[in-house]
Image (tube, rainbow, N blue to C red; front, side):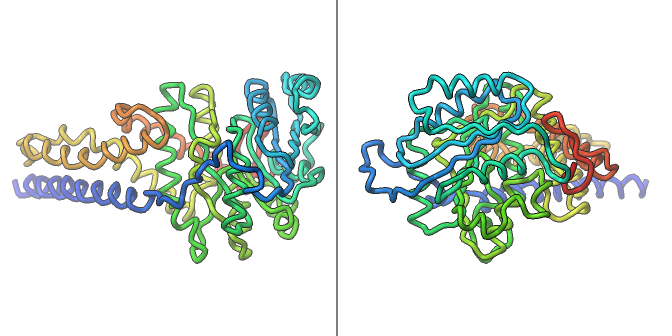
Length: 404
């Protein structure tokens, strides 16, 4: 009898400790990641005089590997920027699909084809990961004062380059990065991307990223604008520790910030949009590539996340099941605990949905997103620890820093 009552007390202690923990987590995360007005780029008016932005030359470098579904939209949007002094260097990274022929067609037909240069790579040298090598190859052909690294699955508003450059120069930055608005046509996009962004913002709070005194650094791979001189001074992706990185955006930002240069990462405000994945398998593989390597705090922290993520995403929806008199918890008590947790969880997730463009009611899938990302993180961790490696874009990388 006494043992039974002890377990009743333990269960009630778990219930209310969990309530306090969930409320504290979502409230704290919300306050830590709520952006300020300064963390958003203000698009320049299309009628703004060109003289309002110093005419520095920009080299846009676009790595592309098997991007036949994305490449035309991206390249044409880059060629149609309302800025005069720039070039677009597309690095075709050993593509086996129609990427090369699409680029050839753009180069033959587009009204601004004189801005386009296409570099074809035919092999990946030992010791390199694909994207760092492609970007490095593009920088060797670049003539700009600034380098812009972007991805083939993005679309750029005509005023994007002028707005970003004006922002970077006004704040005298060395690296300026914008987050891209997410295109979420699929059920799985709207279910999973907000959960992924919750995890990123937890690990890399924007205020800490933009605080010069904080060691936390990250950039958005869809839009990284960096001074050419700074990139060359640091050695960029040609540095031995950078050649094999699978987290090219984070590691470049870390290098820039820790060498004392000025970095800023802000909301692009719709200037750039991205469709990252086209099906569930791509979503799983894409986030699996980054889930373990992109974590901060080492293996112990990852293991804590594998426990904590279900606790804050799945368990709040299961609390009503604890409402059993024989367990010492009345149904009304369990319902009250559930209501308190969902009263903070739902507003936070609805806010996240609004940031990503997902409908508000996808907050109801929060538990599903949490369950799937627990699986992704678990498999990512297992593959790294067992040296199974990371597979991405038809290539296998077999050690902890991504070296092939």
